[in-house]
Length: 494
Ligand code: NAI
Ligand code: MG
Image (cartoon, rainbow, N blue to C red; front, side):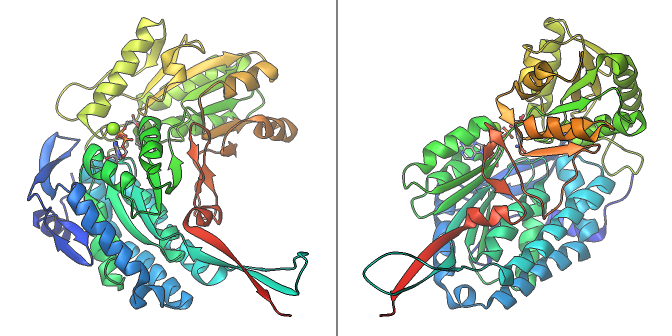
């Protein structure tokens, strides 16, 4: 096991407070909650338990900062440089952030370093550029009664509430904060109760970068209390949420009070389709990566594997072979390839889905059960003998469990099956036939389609869902829509 760096030990030992108006504060109630390491189920830190009153303070700080000269009058160039600096500092502290992520979430340090932390820095660096490059337009209009000059201004939507999950704690904070900052909004970020540590370290980084007071406020606490208060707060102009579809619905209801703008990034049950002409040396490890990356705790996980009958055994057994060699363990052990699930709740949820699959007649050809002992480990699992209506095929498992199902040919039925889901977040297609690849990609109802690859993310690419996978897009230029109001100004120039 790698020892923790002195910086991480020092950070863990500090009190973990709320970031409100540029200062670290205890919760109004004085309460804290425990954070556990899912690899051992041991408590590693106490964190301030923010609630309604803390959210209210944070929202007021954000409201004040929105109009402050320090933020509202900052030039786009300076705003861009500041956001770039945040990206640089994330890279400077990459090891520390990756250690916190591994301790808190369970994921391997090496993965956190190479994926979560690197992509978080990318997100700030990419969004920094938009600060100076997004602008309104002039529009020739045909209205009678005058001679008009019309133009649009893109203004920040205002105070933004952001609620994020635990599967990529730092990266989800980056996906949310960076676009809101580049457009000039101010923010109250409510991080997941399972994994608050890296966002608190990010809060220190934001201050070090020179972000004016109150522009980003960070509240740790529970969803039903702090999260619900943020979603309902009348002084919040927009709410951005990533998490379960069930809570997404609650957010929409809570937002109705003052009709705040809403964007949602929710669940998925993504089809990953392998045709018989695919390069299986790519497709088999690709299908394993599609489901087992981050222990299957990805909204875009390729959890429904549809394989053409002629190659079904070869592919399902190939994926099972890879799964059976994945080394489970503590994320700080350099040998570890897969850590535990994030919490006891998620562990029980995933085990419940395995049981339901077995009861409905599915069979595991590898893994298939929890690992005995401390920590929330579930073996990487490939299920076969499944049919489309089973719960394990319809519902998001959010664990290292893929359901492999054969299909006869690329026809209407295959497309129907792929689209037979309440979700529409992502999909994969593996084939050497470029026409078929395009035909399938065009017909899949999903916000992202990967062809001969999977889980390729980039700050420049929009990501989000059709159907119940959400509203709006994250990343790319598309996300900026979430955080701006377009104002049309018309002048009668006579
Ligand atoms: P969740 O949706 O309850 O939690 C996500 C965030 O929402 C957390 O910050 C939580 O505190 C907050 N939250 C919870 N209840 C809230 C409420 N009433 N009002 C405002 N905020 C609230 O997700 P959970 O319970 O952690 O996981 C359950 C399932 O959700 C997973 O098994 C998975 O299927 C799905 N999920 C999807 C994610 C994605 O990336 N789309 C991420 C995490 C979970
Ligand atoms: Mg929940």
